[in-house]
Image 1 (tube, one colour):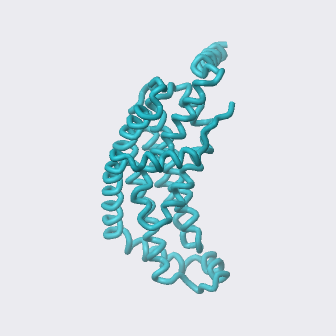
Image 2: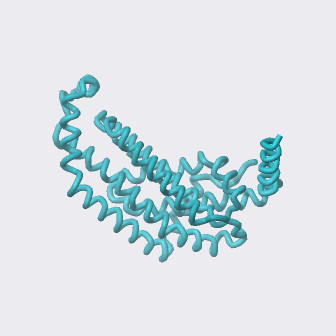
Image 3: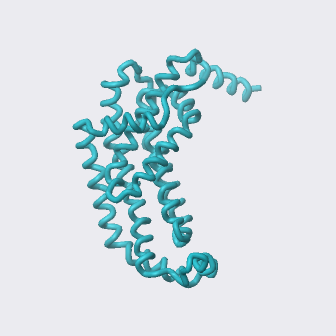
Length: 263
């Protein structure tokens, strides 16, 4: 099955939706949480993280060998401080996204559902539990992944790559579930999340790249939610206009697995 919706089209639609008065106001909450989190991190964790980067750079022979290729004998103070700032900014951004997923996503889904996707019947089940579980799972993976890859931030330009990757992961994996949970049945949700996962990743990657522009990371969480909502609901519309009854197929598959287990 193919779909007419593309991630780029979803991003373009989200840009238009972003200027709706409700969405402009919605930016304030994750914006405030992101800024407050960043300020607290800079006060509490910037110096320790900066010192850790400098100390580790002197201890790791692999780092000295690698940086020598770039004409650097060791890690300078300003560069370690910049890396620490980017690292803490990434965490603050995800905290803002988590808040947006809880507080802003229902508003975005309601707005788009009433204006551009009125034809979509709401068939979601276990909406709140599904969203909370997904947000916790993505948050845990993000924090663990960020900690495990932290030493790689000392490699020149790796901080940019890792920052984009982890923000792309957070944007795509949190927003994609919340975007369709209310409208899609469990079978439809499973199908869309699997088939269109690449498209959600493209949206997350674009949003991650936009975050590299100064101050844009403060508004991107809401924009990412809008883009994923457009993409997810458009995919759901295409699915329901198709010839395959996903819910019936899902039920038949489950019954087949049950009978297989009994045998």
